[in-house]
Image (tube, rainbow, N blue to C red; front, side, top):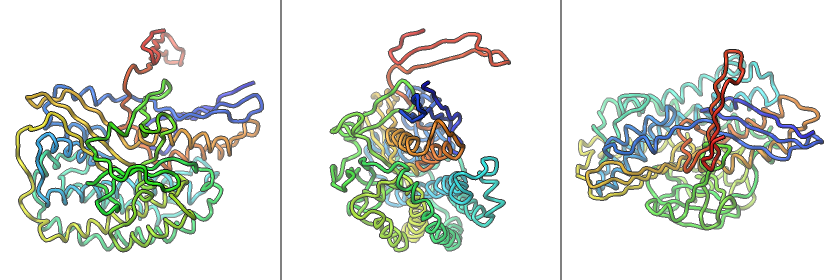
Length: 481
């Protein structure tokens, strides 16, 4: 008899989700899906608000990556103002965006995935968590906490708050960098850089123990997309979007962010609130692409900081030719990006005009539309706004990193379930692997659930004992049952 396995909730991710695995009569996996169960609706909530409120409003979307939304939103507002922000303001925005990347990557790698990597995918689930990691590998746990603390503290020094800072504003930033704050950041860099170098050395051997997972965790042909700079190098703040295929063939060398709608489509499915983005010229769902640290290193041709450049060269050797296809290597790419971010922050803090007090351009609205793109920790983040002649919001579309990866995450869940799950001999370690491949993508579901169109909805009224007293169902066509 056909059966369904439900993993609910998916653990050690940011947000709420479940996974369903369909088995046939013989217990073999026939299908698997990654369901996002929450709806946020920020795209509608902001309509009617003054556009200049958008950066602070959008930062409230997420408690994990508010800075990324702040930066992308402010860039969309810059476009509405039609201003070129001061160089120092751009550099300061880069620093806070990289600090966000450091703290988020550290959270994903050390808190959420390191228990799988160091304690084992089949270890006792009761202790397979950050507390178990603290008992068995206290130094690794301390290092992860320290890295995340550094990233959070840089955000606080610049934005005056660790979460939901409002320092990035349309036209630049609200205040210049104080000399004593610059000195504090520079003083901490050698220590935290040493931590990530040590982690790279340690985990390089750990990764070698997961050869089967490397071959089965989201290893399939797909496109990859990310920002690159004018030289084709790794970029997180400014640049153009580059798309390559699984052979490394460049499909798009440099899409201007303002023209994203010509290249990126969005679709919805009735079983998830998370939109699925795809590459329009190929269509849905074959236009599946991946974003985030793995994709950024795959599309980049160089890395501009010396130590990260060495690791980047080693990363490129993981595949004999073409991009690195296994999503397991998101973990390695994440550590490389932390190293890059620390080195880049050091470079930016040593720019001669980094303490300049000219950090904001002022203007009234000069355009009725604006698009802002930045690389969030999990991948490309896009904000698109339209305003009326008074600067009030009429339209917002957000394409969030996790939505870009939605098709690939579903494909990965199915691939891992097919390889590991045996319905006749079900074991916990099998199901943990299905969850672990999702952790490799580090999805942030609280900020990515913005479905479009007529969304399916199911509301249940339950008694204290769980008995369903009443139920309201609306399907994807808007019909009520």
